[in-house]
Amino acid sequence: MEIINMTQLNKTQITQAAQILTDSIPIGWPTLQDALAEIKALLVPGNTLLAAVEDGVVLGWGGILPAYNGNVFEIHPLAVRSDRRRQGIGRAIVTALEDEARKKGGLTIHAGADDERDDGETSFANVDLYDDLPGKIRDFSPGTHQSAFYMKLGYKIIGVMPDANGIGKPDIFLGKRLW
Ligand SMILES: CC(C)(COP(=O)(O)OP(=O)(O)OC[C@H]1O[C@@H](n2cnc3c(N)ncnc32)[C@H](O)[C@@H]1OP(=O)(O)O)[C@@H](O)C(=O)NCCC(=O)NCCS
Image: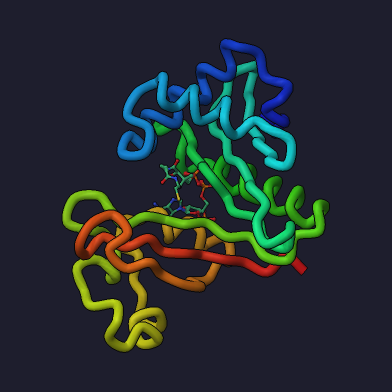
């Protein structure tokens, strides 16, 4: 498996990447067309999109977008093909994105992880996040949510947006120092 800049992918591989996105995060990108449009919009100078490719086939991909004059990079989006998860591919992509952000002078990298599926997956779902947020961060429990993945990679909760996806469905910000 290799990590490749997505500017080097051919049309078939871009379609594979889009398929992974719509399959993995249908709430954000319900159709293949939506996912293709997102990749096109993200593939612009300033952003970096990296794909994990094995035998010419895209297995997952992610991007970083600069913010705060390049001091901060946001991971957006990140998805690994469902039949290839838990094999280190997500970690390989994120590590490569961190290296890229560091090379560009980034000090902080972060991801927003929405807790929006079903009745909520983390201990932040369906609770009053205005009441003792520090305590709730200290006692955070990810359940089945993807925030567990970021925490395994050394990311810490650096903030939360209450009700970002409807009442009781927050966006959880996970960040990591790059220096
Ligand atoms: C989140 C995602 C990218 C992780 O990719 P992955 O290739 O399965 O992750 P890795 O195999 O590299 O996992 C790295 C570590 O995190 C752990 N991990 C991964 N997903 C996890 C989860 N949902 N819950 C708990 N731990 C998890 C792995 O077990 C591994 O731990 P280890 O180092 O102790 O073995 C993948 O599950 C995915 O595409 N999910 C759907 C889309 C999504 O949620 N994207 C993120 C939006 S913020």
